[in-house]
Amino acid sequence: MTDSTTGGATRAAVGLRVTHRRYVPYSHAHYAGNLVDGAYSLAAFGDVATEMCIATDGDEGLFASYSDVQFRAPVRAGDVIEISAELVRVGRRSREMDFEVRVVARGNPSRGESAADVLDPPVVATTARGVVVVP
Image (cartoon, rainbow, N blue to C red):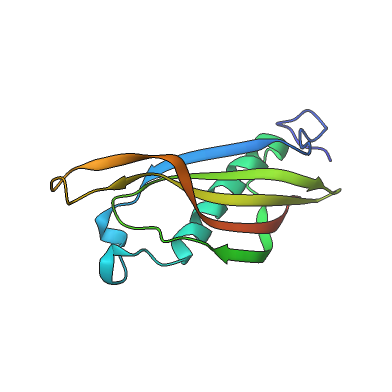
């Protein structure tokens, strides 16, 4: 693979990992109990996949597919989530990644309006596998 950013070669390697953290704002609550819809996790997976493609190939890439999406625990407004992508297969133009959303902190309104707790261990909320393509 040739591109001007990587000087002619991809930096994609199995085991490479990208991680983001973000606060889930209350404006994203979609259901009772301040639940956030599953599409929120999928959008976050797209963000880490984009960074992975930029880091490895100097291009944002395009998502081709998701497989084995599992919604394991709720994501709620007020959560702090950690989203990761790990390269598990590198093809000539395709990159297969495992994704995970972990809730690392959660609001605790029983202690006060703005109270929150760090979760140790974090709660795995969403997992998936996805394939992106790069030019």
